[in-house]
Length: 73
Image 1: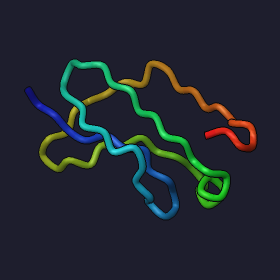
Image 2: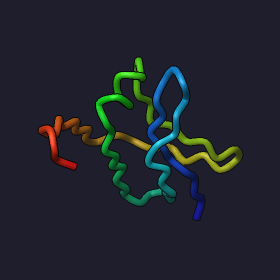
Image 3: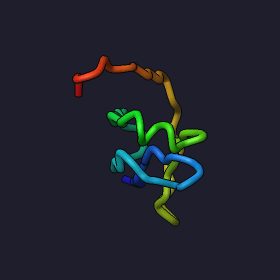
């Protein structure tokens, strides 16, 4: 079946994080822990696919952002 790669991308530097293969009609989870210094460099976060000629439509059902206390990973 048709597949692609999905990733979290930090803007403006277009940093790719959590690069995850996905397949058509299958559920998937993206998960990434970012440091405060990494997040402070970004003005926005984008979920994107970057496989030319192999794009798969996707829907976001749930988005969770959790702040970890100092010392947690």
